[in-house]
Length: 281
Image (cartoon, rainbow, N blue to C red; front, side, top):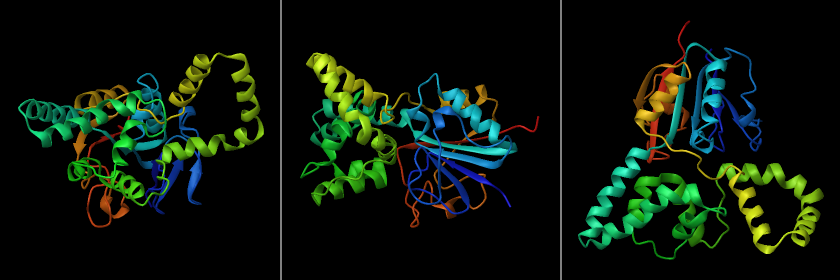
């Protein structure tokens, strides 16, 4: 029976996969700090998959992470990666820019959202950033456009805002909060109180921003079909190929409901999907 590895899984798990995340939340998830490596032996898996994980590693860290994926794959094993598609975002941005500059009010609202896609997840200094504020508006003028681009996660955030419930944090943010909760309860409150006495208000604010930006939520880099192909080749993979959410060389891919929902809709439509092979030698 083939063995499959799902890294940075969040809540998107499957019983036929070994599911790994920074903190084990569901009972079938293995906890591991992926910045320190993938905790399995060489050649353990026939496929390794991760979705919207790679962009949270810095450009310098990304090759080491992919080389760990390479290591745990068997020869002729498949790596499948989903990341935000920089090319798609930029092309949509340029189209919206040109239309907005010509006087289209609809394009102007789409332009506002695409600017958030491009920059907010890179520059934000607090959880959710301006993107969350946009989605929590009582009236979103281009809601259908956003749902077409951002899929299930945006839909859930919009629904949470409208129900006036506390929005569900993305899994990577929940991971950070859970992993630090014990430290917060034991010592961080006292440490922060001391730091506020020792530091000026601006220095303390800078410290808080630095802590947030190193916590894992922000995007550290972005990829397109060219850069992702080059990075996979750099890490020893062969046959890098762009896929769709529905197609894969992994047997019965859509039955796992990882890139797609049970009804066939795409979980993250703003993604680019790539697969490559670990060579036999």
